[in-house]
Image 1: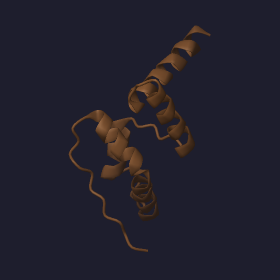
Image 2: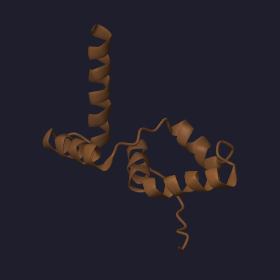
Image 3: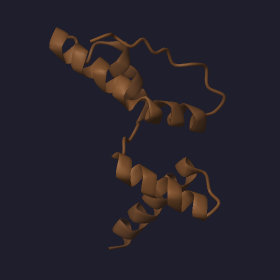
Length: 95
C-alpha cells in the first residue's frame, strides 16, 4: 500500500480548517492507527492537534444530513451544527 502524504495548508478561517479536516478524516485516522501500532499514540503532533482542536467527527450520513439542512436554512454547515449542539444543551439543562 502506497503511503499518502498530506500536508494541511494554511487556513483563512476556522470554518475552512474544519472543512479540510472533515474531508481528510481518513488521513488523521491513518496517523492515529500508525502511532498506535508504533506505540507513540499520545505523544505525537497529530494527537496534540486533534485535542487542541476540540473536534467532533460525525459519521458521513449525519454530516450529509446536517449539510443539507444547513443549506436549506441558508446557513454555513459549521454554524448550523454549533446551533444544534447549543439548542440540545439548552434543552438538556432545562430538563
